[in-house]
Length: 385
Image 1 (spheres, one colour):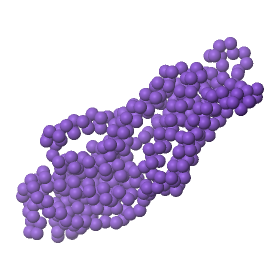
Image 2 (tube, rainbow, N blue to C red; image 1 turned 90 degrees about the vertical axis):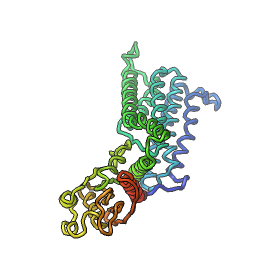
Image 3 (cartoon, rainbow, N blue to C red; image 1 turned 120 degrees about the vertical axis):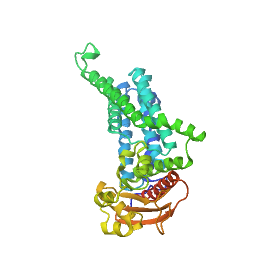
Image 4 (tube, rainbow, N blue to C red; image 1 turned 180 degrees about the vertical axis):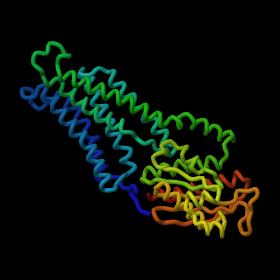
């Protein structure tokens, strides 16, 4: 297996650019709000309009560094946890500083700023809650459009008083004024839309997370189920982070592995599908398991598990697949294959294998233990991309 792994270094070129962007925010604020022309004896050369123009240029330069650090991180394969935290934080600091400065200059009323900042607080809070549970909620294109429109709107409002249209007795007759507000309204629309989209993706986590934790604390949720749920979140998180798609082929678990995986918000980005192949005919026809092998060894076999995983990957086009077949009980034992005998097979970008497990307990416990073990195998496969 090969793939892009997050580096543990902090001072990568991308992160240096991010830190510089944050450090330049006070420069922008000073350039826009302070009487620096008087400090340097330039008041006769630089007026309010010139200050706004210079501040707009500084703001555009700082905004462009966001593209630079993203390009450096991806091209150099230096994605770091520090960068993941600081990059969006730098954007929020810059936008918030610019909006508050525009309020200070009485160029922009406070209500658009309250909408934008409220959205950022709400989304950041949900993102922190999701991250604490190992869940990654994929960002949509709404958020990217929102960011671009906010930056453009801020630049237009910075320049609004530096551009004068002839013969405009009222602001509504000034094309630049009207254009500035149209872009700001569009930015506010996508600000709210992106928040609604984000909350809709996180809603299952928001609604069911506390209920699930309370049930577990009260003994209403089995430890095995909790372990499987946590592993599923880790598998989805690692798959999203490393760009792996996954699929499953299940016999004795009857879709239980897929159920835990698809219960994780954001799993649709990486879980392509699964096949519940309970019957021998389904294993042969849908997963291309060799019919002679099934006739000779039966369903409970290591080679069968490997071919099930290979077939699931081929059917779905996934990078990684896991398959399980075994005897959950209480009956069904065979010579050399007692109740609880399980084979877990895997396929990972051309590499495949299987191993045998022997679980004890009730039928449901064997199925849950198989699910937990299969998710552990999946976690190991996707960890390195």
